[in-house]
Amino acid sequence: MATNFLVHEKIWFDKFKYDDAERKFYEQMNGPVAGSSRQENGASVILRDIARARENIQKSLAGSSGPGASSGPGGDHSELVIRIANLEVENQSLRGVVQDLQQAVSRLEARLSALEKSSPAHRATAPQTQHVSPMRQVEPPTKKAATAAEDDEDDDIDLFGSDEEEDKEAARLREERLRQYAEKKAKKPALVAKSSILLDVKPWDDETDMAQLEACVRSIQLDGLTWGASKLVPVGYGIRKLQIQCVVEDDKVGTDLLEEEITKFEEHVQSVDIAAFNKI
Image 1 (cartoon, helix red, strand yellow):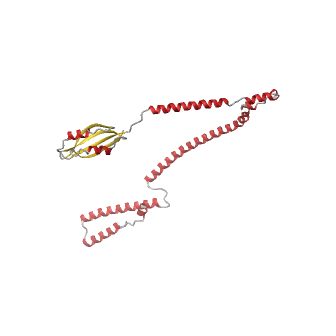
Image 2 (cartoon, one colour; image 1 turned 45 degrees about the vertical axis):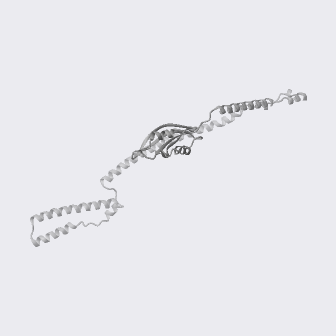
Image 3 (spheres, one colour; image 1 turned 120 degrees about the vertical axis):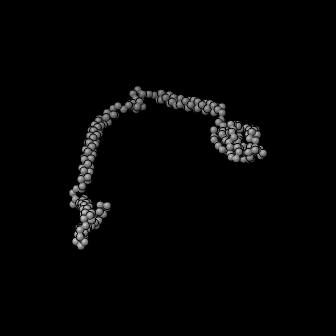
């Protein structure tokens, strides 16, 4: 789009001619001026060179964008040569890849044809290698002449009695293993769910005895409650809060019960907050 815009741009290429004519007219009327004439001649030369350069640019753009243009400037021509060379190299590499694929396909076809040729012979010999079930063998003539008494004796034989005994033994073993597993599971101690809680106990003011406050908190003894480390954390204006760690059993001690027991010490405790709560 920029090329087309420059092609159709209207530029006054002959302006220097009119400037020269105007200068000559005023020189004839007022007489020549040496310094000014030299400056005007230099300016006219520069304008003339600029106009010629613009005209050359317009002609080159028109030639490169026109339908009949065969080639562009020297830079475009060299770029086309490089692109053509790259395309030739790529074409050669693609030809090599195609040849390799053709060879692989030909090898696969040869292998497939060899397998197809060998398959009929394999099918023909396969029935000969199949084993014959003993139940389908032809009985000798002597067994056909067996008496009816021998057939009755064969009917009395219980062929499945052993299977019933094996089923009973397997059931007994399974029951024994289940009983042992239940006993082992009953002896194994159950896991107790515990939690680690970090409490923030805030006093009323900076005059509250923090040692007495901590002693009050640690005096709370509950089943499933274990007190841990503690420290005093500054809050502001000289006030410090008690930060104390404890471990509780979830089934026995809850956070509500802890807050209720600690806030009973109304003379020292203003409020209780849970700073951290982690399952163990």
